[in-house]
Image (cartoon, rainbow, N blue to C red; front, side, top):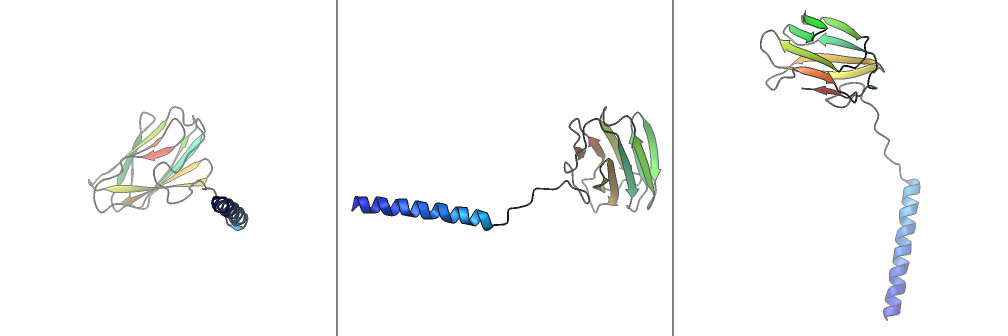
Length: 147
C-alpha cells in the first residue's frame, strides 16, 4: 500500500512537471518594461549619467509659472501656452535641478516625457489642490525625479 502511494505521488509529480513545461512553452511571457516616453511620473525616466540633455517646458496651466535653474539660469516666466527649451551642454554633471512656482500661489503638477533619447519634456498643468510639484531633479544615477 505504501509503495502504491509513493508511485502515485511520483507519477503526480512527473505529470505536474510536464504540464508546467508544456504551459511555459505555449504561454505568452510578459514583455519587458519599456522606458517611459509620455505621461511619465517621478523616477520613470533615466538618462545616462553625465549625458547632455535638452529640457522642453510647456505651461498648460491657467496661471503664469516661473522657473529657475540656479545658478545657471535665473527666473523666467511662462504664461499659459508658452514654452521654453533649455540646453544643458555641460551634461547632467553637476546634477540638474529646476525649480518651479506659480505666480498666483496655485497648485501645479508636472507630466514628464522623453520624446527623444536626450530630451526631457515637462508639461505643467494646474492642479485642483495641494500638494503642488515644485522641482525636477536629474539625480546622480540619471533618474528624473519630481518633488
